[in-house]
Image (cartoon, rainbow, N blue to C red; front, top):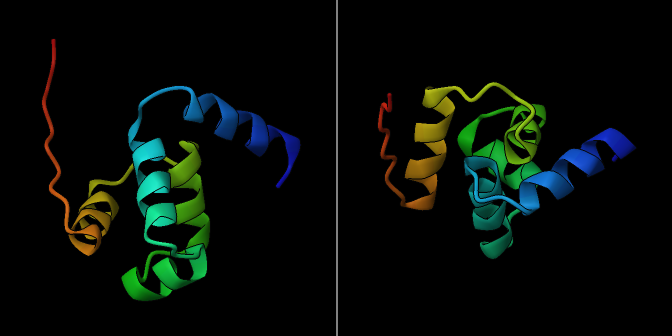
Length: 79
């Protein structure tokens, strides 16, 4: 992992975020990015970017991951 990615990952770990939640879910289930990619058909590079917060979040991918993990997605529009 390059230094920029590591720095981003460290910033995310210090804040509650969707990226952090996705990473923690995968790690807690002892899944590799390769296995998750295979099971969900989401490319590894997108999963990795989602977990460090550097990929624009696509709701379709978020819903696929939520279903895979047995979670629900709650979206709220704020002013």
